Amino acid sequence: MAPISGRPLVERLARLHRLYAWSLLAMLLSGLVLYLPGLRGPLAAIRAPLRQAHIAAGVAQIVLIAAYLRLLLPHWRSLGPWLGKRINLVISLLLAAGWSLSGAVLWWDRAFLPYTQAALFWHDLLTWVGGLYLAGHAVVRYFKIELALPWARVGPRRARPLANPIAAYRLAKAIERRRFLTRVLKQGGMLLGGSWLVGWWLKQRREVELPALAQVQPAARAPAYPVPQPDPRSSPPVGGGAKGHFRIYNVARSMPHFDPYTWRLEVNGLVRRELSLTWEQVIELPRDVWVRDFHCVSGWSVRNVTWEGIPLSALLDLAGVLPQATHVKFSSYDGVYTDALTLEQARLDDTFLAMLKDGKLLTDPEGAPLRLIMPRMFAYKSVKWVTRIELIDQPHMGFWERLGYAEDAWIPGVDRSGPSPRA
Image 1 (cartoon, rainbow, N blue to C red):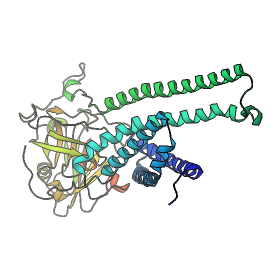
Image 2: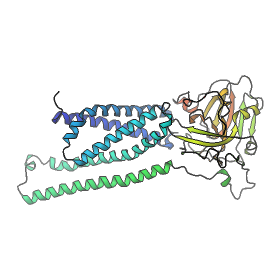
Image 3: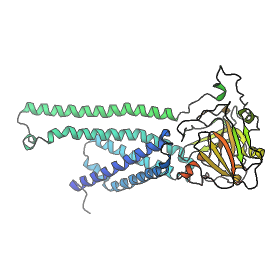
Image 4: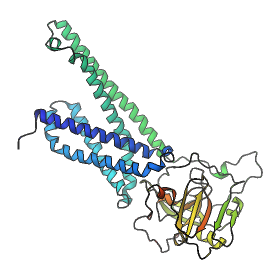
């Protein structure tokens, strides 16, 4: 086989470079849209197909990298003594490999669940740092071409060596200064911008310790609403405290705020006794403690969370479930989000309405005052801001299931029916 060199090599590399750039742009833009919490609500209807488009862009990237590997050695040799270009090539290949590997783990999350948290960390980090690097590279390459255009357009007469040594020297120094300036702008801008983005990203990952409900009572408002005393197993948390950080999502236009004076927990539908419980009545109900992991279908997890709350089966027994009821529907106080469980799933001994997390009352972003926790399923089943529980006689498609999420939300490998370990 004849060696790949010269014009054919340049043309093939240019074609692959263009295709790779477009696939990378599609992957970065779709990934950014999927990441930003504020876009979950406005773009909920296209979130599932957008995720598929993001995966397709990633697959295209892998295919293009595989096609490039045949040209890697001749390309490397063609770079000659250009150390900067070789470094850029190595960085680009490392970014592609990191994105491909972490993306594949997140794609097949059910098969690689123990590794999705690490994969998501690296996928996000590579996106912020690598995306900025490649954007800077693209801008600098563009301006380098633009800077060369005045000399390329002067025609054959100016393309010949300049007869005047002084003019030639000045021209060479001007080109050198422009190249130095582009290097300074590229490296300095990328360093400063990268540091800022990494710092911002790490700050977003850090769990914000919002005040518990007991600490935000209006001083001028009397009487102060009652606050439940944590179970001794909750404070300090028997599980040792949550390992990881919750990402706060909301699909409604605004986040609900818990007002203990007006809030009610409604239990109705196919029940013998409809309930409308005030906050004071809810905190008097018997509670239990569970130590459970929390898995989001997006790839992140929080492990060893000590939850305290009301067993759902006890609440259903209090209302009295009629024989024709087959499913339990949960409605969020935001007026948008709903989901449902079968009656058998709702009666599992670790399906509950959480009130406290690691000994502290839930905050508004976490779903205060009550959120459903179904730890054997992915988190889109764990409805936040639960305000209504309705017993129904038919299946109900939840918010995300209607928009393309899997109806099978079970965590891989869990026991779907048996008793669970107690805290």
